[in-house]
Length: 222
Image 1 (cartoon, rainbow, N blue to C red):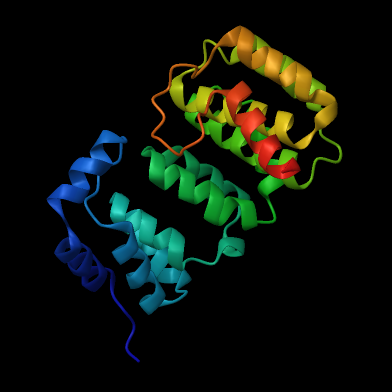
Image 2 (cartoon, rainbow, N blue to C red):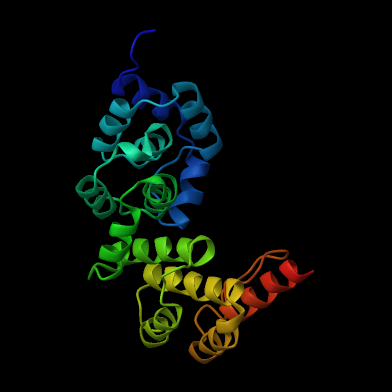
């Protein structure tokens, strides 16, 4: 089968452009108009193609980058490459998919987690917190959970939106997964009041940490 070219893929993405999808995405800070279901269908057809993924990333187009993250080989990236990519990923969806679909599956994830947590760029730091939340839930051994709560208590209230959201997720996850820290996690959430007034649709769980923790613990214990 002939190799798929970047030009062919970009033409296909252009054909999938939907003004309604773009309007919805733009409300969330994203700058593309491709329905994600259709994007995933395209990725399924293309299958894994690391070289094409790298070329699509270089286009700096958000839809192309999302597709790249679906067809790449996560373990193929080096540490410096992923560090550069997280700094280039400035829209929320590209950032989230890069962390969740690629970095979490890469052998350098822990080294990057530690480096990004201390990064002065709040968007990069939010990736470090996302990786930390993953460890809180799945591999907490060796994590200083009390120390993480100290940092959250000191810094979350005044953190920029993306970083605040990531720290809040970590706070909730500590409270949900680790009963010995639950009372303190809830108390921090109540005292800081972060996302307390976040508009939550019916049937969805509020991201306000005390409510989130209580609801998820109820489900687990139910």
